[in-house]
Length: 137
Image (cartoon, rainbow, N blue to C red; front, side, top):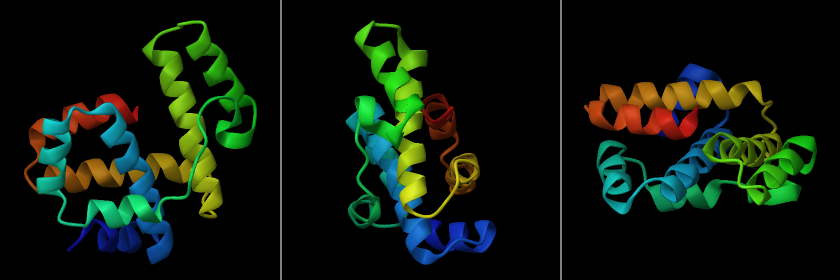
């Protein structure tokens, strides 16, 4: 079973929402992981990454991310050099904005992340699970 099929079945979302949500999280992984780790992730998940990332709605970084306070806080933290934790807040705001464009609430972000981590673990990507957890949480 593919990742998209798993998300549709386990989360009760549409195919488009599954593809877009997975694409948003894979884009984050691509941005945060080294090329070797991302390649390993691509080996574990049989879905076409380019297609999934292409299905992800565009999200803006910085002050416009999420269209509100979260985006502004993340941008301000990055500008002040407040470190990785605050940078992750900016990432989170962008992801929430992307999920909203898919018609999904912010709570689905956690469910998608958990489902993707479970999927990777089930496919034998145990070493990748820890790496993914660090960028998704």
